[in-house]
Length: 102
Image (cartoon, rainbow, N blue to C red):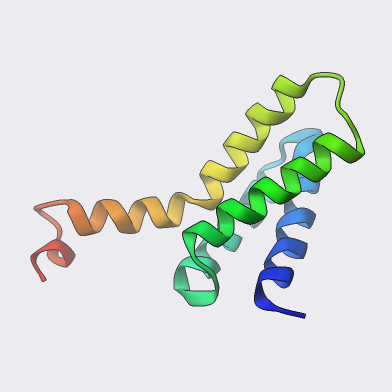
């Protein structure tokens, strides 16, 4: 199994756990996926591609009664997954950050 397939499987599991109840535990699993990806397992574009793939599966295989609710939840979940990338980006571009002074 490739790294991207592994990422998709783990993302699918966490996202499907998150959707029904928007649980903090499932949100934390999403954060951990993003943290692992940021540490070198996958890139930002890989995560976005996997997110789109999984969201499409959800919308096609089990059409929800309220697509807007599912897409809003998907946005929240993706934001959490990408938060590590956002923190790293901000640290690199913050003039007060030691990382930005290189």
